[in-house]
Image: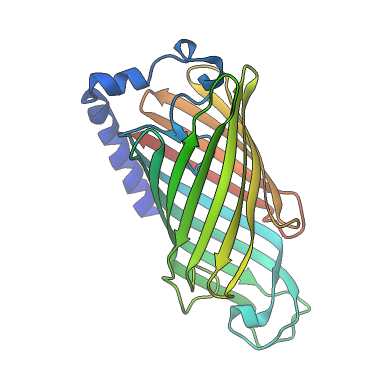
Length: 290
C-alpha cells in the first residue's frame, strides 16, 4: 500500500509537467467532445483498453496505479487446491487486497500494448464443516498476476457500423509454488469486441476464450456488456455486466472524475450477482496520460 501511494504521488507531481510539454498534435487529440461526431463524444478518438471506460490514442502512454480489494463470504475451494489433502468442496471466507500498476501505450491509431502487475495479500478462512488438515486460515502475500496484452482495432466505427477489435493476453507463470496468489502456469486469452456510440451513451460487447496451462485445456473466458456515458467535461459513468461461465456474474459500476485534461480518478465496485462471483470488489486509482 505504501508503494502504491508513492507511485500515485510521483504521477501527480509529473502530470502538470507532462501536460505542459505536449505537442500541438497531441493537444488536438483532447478537443472538446462537441467537436467530435456523436458516436465518439463519450469516449473520444482512442481505441479501447482492458480498463473499464478507458481509451488510448496513438503515441499516448497511460499510467494507472490503483488499489483493489475483494470480499467473498461464500468462496468455493477444496483443501487440495490450497496444498492440503481433500477433494471435497467447501465454502469459506475470502479476503484480499492488492496494489496494481497498469501501463498502456498506443503504438498506432489501431494497435495498443498493455502491461499490468500486482502485489497482493490474500486469505481464506476455513469453512466450519471442513475437517481436513488445512489450518483455520491460509494466507499468502507477494507478487500477483503479471500480464501483457496486445489489442488491435481492425474496423473503426463510422456513422453506420460499430467498431470491431480483438485482443490477445498472456499471463506469466511467476508463482509456481503458491495457491492463492499469482499464476502457476502460462495462461492465454483471445477475445473480440464491438463498440457502438449513440447520443444516449456508448455500448461495448466483448467475449473471449482462454487456455489454462495448469489444466492444459481450452475454455470459454470472460464476457461483458459495458455502458459508458459522458455527463459533462469532468464526469463520466460506466456500468458493466461481466461474467466468466454462467456462475460468476458481477455488476460493475464506476465514476470517473476528469479533473485535468491528462488525468482522472476512477472509483468503482464489483457487485457479485451469482454464488461463485466475488461479493464485493471495490477499486480506486488515478490514471495519467503522457
